[in-house]
Length: 288
Figure 1 (cartoon, rainbow, N blue to C red):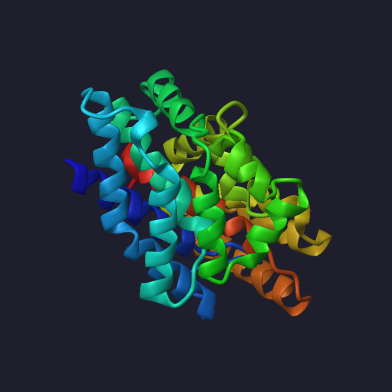
Figure 2: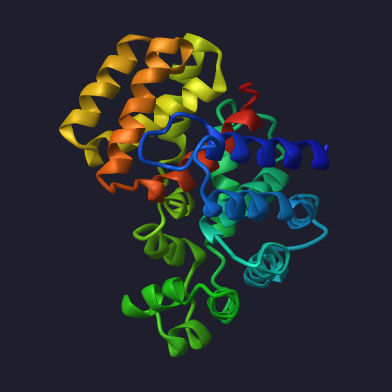
């Protein structure tokens, strides 16, 4: 069961990353090195995601306590393994899925939407961990995997070495700060996570077409349209009226919008991580 859950999460993340056409952002028909790097990160995370879901199960069964789980070290291990296998590290694509895995193991749910309260409770318990030094493990890992930008971003907000070592900074607080730089981390804010609202939106789109690629493209457009040019938004509106990827005409309009944004040097790659994370959740829910 553990392997099946992890495979569904990884599969969904790859579908979210590769779903096309996402005008201005990463998709599998856009030959960029970063696409291959992120794909490698997601795939190489499998054994550590299995470890995370297993630890969640052990806490549920009373074999371990959350206080005994060194979440920071597990995340640090995930980041270092990504770097070892892929020679680069993109934490916003793998850390949310790791936390989701642990929450699924702890809550023992088969669907987030059908038992959202149990999943949310598990997520809150995991993110409330504030054992001194645990968050520091992640920050130290950022430095060793070439992600000093995240390290410096945390420090610029006042999360310094003394705070990390001596005081109880929760993972929820840290992910909220990181979310201002990489959107997928906002899914890990225990109180205000948009995860459940996003999942409802995905359900609405999926019920109309029963097509996951089209669902994720529609979701991406909701996120990205405020950042697009007027010309690209017009093409997107036309694509929506044509059914997006469900018709050749709709797909062509999205392709044109993608080309237009590229010619103007507009990149919306910063939204791809949240689409990948929601893709992971969507496949766990049974969307195909």
